[in-house]
Length: 120
Image 1: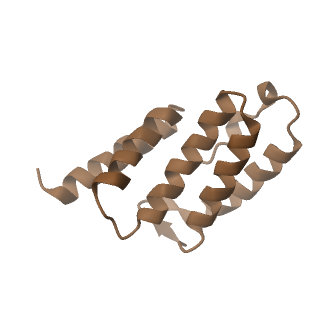
Image 2 (image 1 turned 180 degrees about the vertical axis):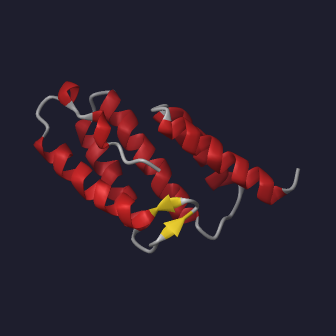
Image 3 (image 1 turned 135 degrees about the vertical axis):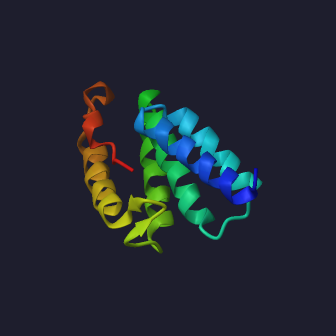
């Protein structure tokens, strides 16, 4: 299998796991992509990894870690706009601002509204 096809398959596998709410698995797959290939958009991939890990922290009741990784992921998406790798970046950035507000307001992690997880 050629390298580009492998890269695309890994990216899509990560996206599928993310969409199923398997954030740890998504992060692991994208981490393989990020570490095994030196991609032009590696910051974008790193942002997806950090976003996924933010939700892993949230599920583990680590609000500090969740907030930190969300903030880091937002920075990684700044240089991207429009649609990138089939993801609407402009909508994603807006969703992350809304998510950041929710993270600040939430007092009990068990009450987190998981419907706020951005679609990719």
